[in-house]
Amino acid sequence: MVKAYSQEYTYKHPWDRVTCASWRKFADPENKRILSHILEVDTLNRKVDPESGKLYTTRAITIHAPGPWFVRKIVGQDICHCVESTVVDARSQSMQLTTRNISLQKFIEVVEKIRYEPHPENPNGWTICKQETSIRIKPLSALASMAEKVEQRCAERFVQNSAKGREVMERICKYLEAESNGFTI
Image 1 (cartoon, rainbow, N blue to C red):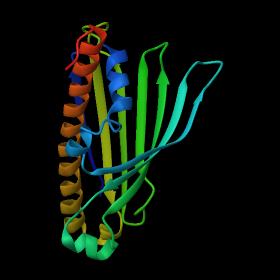
Image 2 (image 1 turned 45 degrees about the vertical axis):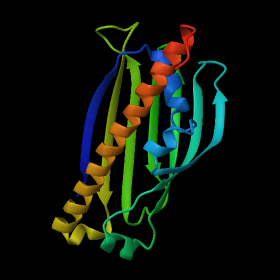
Image 3 (image 1 turned 30 degrees about the vertical axis):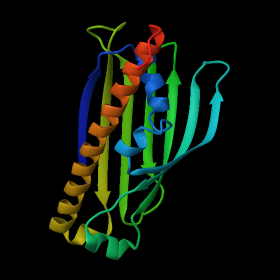
């Protein structure tokens, strides 16, 4: 069983502001209240390819991911470690993030892909965010109906957390807009 979903969101801010907000999303102490499931973010690697000019970044993200009590009983923990790989191509104005869990893999496999690029209807003023997430519960495959319910609950949690992330991104974009106009919020 695999639960997959995708969603799109339009930020009414230019690409450079939205991608800047993406980098600041976990760093701002005020966001920790909203993104309370994110426990820690560490940059493992960052490099710029001299030929293409693309920025490649790898970050480790530790997430508090409480599930139903019976899943915690089976798994034995509610902390998940993930790796986020990001590629930024400033020339083509594309930022792609791929996040996958590296812990709990024998129980659950989650892959989230996010892409930011200029919106086709207003490329200088808006940014479109396309998000795809797939969730697969592994040991419960024999119990398909239970696996389906757990996958559905996980997907619902991802949708809730995505909305929180968009809220934080919007706030940071407004802050950056005010900052660029010489105002403070």
